[in-house]
Image 1 (cartoon, one colour):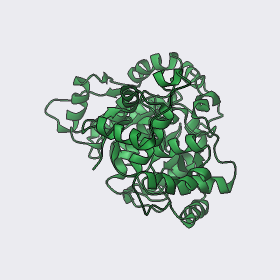
Image 2: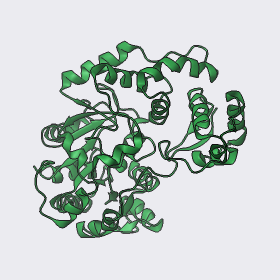
Image 3: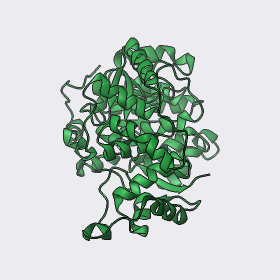
Image 4: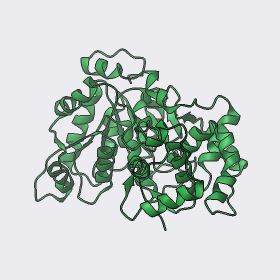
Length: 406
């Protein structure tokens, strides 16, 4: 298959590759782990109770290292009202690390040069990914394909043509290693490059009938997961997986999908992440095309073949490389009135937490809007939000919006 360092013959692939530089990670503000101990610190922090990707990144930016963030967690939890909080045990991180080593998996950290620049720009990029296969595929430009598990013969034929056509132009095909459309897309792109995003551990094959394509992708593609090795996929893991499929990709193509399907969740994730959403129209009487037709009514780009996909994505390729998406916890904040006055002091932490809780409601509110509304220094607001999220009093929604918790 075509490897990352293989020459690309087509103009589209050449244009795409110009946007991949180390500068794409500069805005993160921290380096990846430089030793096994630091990698274990990262694992211990992300596996700690109530610490998701967004909270992890806020803690890392605040404390400048995962070790210092771990040391500060009990005090932060106490401030949030959690009296018996304990971070994950060190042995939990060590067991996971050894299990990954035994598999021959690579632990890829956010801000590593081989970490996808596209994925690093979403609101909640996974701090760590377990990878089996050719990690270099993550540094190439990707296009996602998602669709029906019970796909029609016509839907799979179209998927095969799309994956082969896009692969021949230098794109890596990303999908979820599921039945139907996903499997077909992976099979068609094995020779040119394909990434499978798993809901469970990187060593857990689901569904079992896909064992053959899993083994082929382990040798000639790439399999990734943010879950620990050995983790069996649960229903809650699949929406989390879907955001990675769209996050890795310049755009997502839906060849065939019903109205209530995970593929439409992936499409909406893509839209929230600023990715191009593309769909193939189908007959109104065919339930397997109803989701695609719905997406088209909502403004998705109509596509019929690989050339249509390339045409839809070319403006994105020609545009300057985007920075963090709006609402991203890592994005630079807009000007704040308190920042321009050196004599201004933020209110005490308990007052900040109270003001945040009083301002939020059931309807999600973008984080940057909350900070502007309350005229709070970004650093003080971020610290308070971390504590409130840990306590479950604030819920973070896809796209970075916030609402009151239980």
